[in-house]
Amino acid sequence: MTGRRSAGWIVSVRRACGKLLLACATASCSLLTGAESNGAERVQWRLPIADPPASFEAPAVSGERLFVKLSPTLVGAFALADRRQLWRVALPPEGSGVDGGPSNAVVCAGVVVVGQIGRVIGLTADDGTQRWSAPLSRGGALVTGQLRCQDGVVYVGTFRPAIVYAIDASTGRERWARSMYDLPSVNAFAINPLPAGRIVVVGTREFSVPLRGFIVGLDVDSGREVWRFTWQPESPSGWGSWNPGGTCDGSLCVVSVDDGRVFAMDAATGAVRWTAPAVPGYATPADDRPIAITDSVVLVGSRSGVLTALRLGTGERLWTVGSLAQAFEYSVYREIQASGGAFLIVNSGLQLIAIDARSGDVLWRANHRSFPLGGYYPMGAVAGNTWIVTSTDGLYGLRIR
Image (cartoon, rainbow, N blue to C red):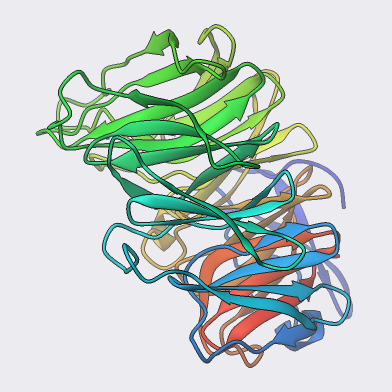
């Protein structure tokens, strides 16, 4: 079915005996409305890596290989075709651990880059040989999921102090380090650096009362601040810091802030192209709103239980699914992935859901009882038509369409 789903619109739901037309009686349609699916039918393969346990970090895909942070001190590489282990490397123990949030792995210029507390390490993708180890010259702890790559450079955001680093992926040489505050003692994060052409867009979350922050565009060559964007929360009690949710599509970066609003910004100038409101009726000082883009559609999650799809170019609302009645059971506040016109989410109700970007139709869903996952994390990766989901007993490859 094609079309848009929003308040009051009639949606078509396929049943085994035919088609049944239902009208949405609430402000938006429920995530439970959609194609039924047995999760076991979606499982293409399982990669058992339960000993040691799989970490909470998302795997990285490059070509026909899968790179997995097995633990804070262990990285493995596997062939996607048959899940054969290619190599397994133990990282140096110094500086590693749970405190400080060891980062994700990212493949950049043929190097698998991983973070530990106080340093970043580069491994040769072909055989896992350690190529370099780069201490963070100005300190700061790495934030989970904060490594980003563009044109052979890895961008790293840290907290306490809030600093953005640019590190050459081939050599480990630090190109620049930019502090977000004049005083290094400020208790703050430099969140989710987003490289977009000649600019790295990065926001901050300062632990003041209430929380505050700003968004800046940094020059990729020097770290120089090119522009700065600030805002005031719409509610006096609302938080005014940047939310980790954000992604870029070409020169347009779409980010969310803690009071629930969404801004689409020109990466080169910081100019706001459009703004989308917070979820109506969701009264809270802060809302975590992850963002993903595919087929010129922006999907914005929320702790409220409402997913909102917006047109990339204008911010026009295309459809919504979910309702405030499901705020605690079906909220979506972790990373959303996108591939080939489908959005892939893990919600707080432990459902894996694939949604068509154009129509908002639920392509399929599977809960934790549908197939033998030992319990899974909201971290994953996409390889073609396969959604790779991280679980307590390994990784699973699920067929998207």
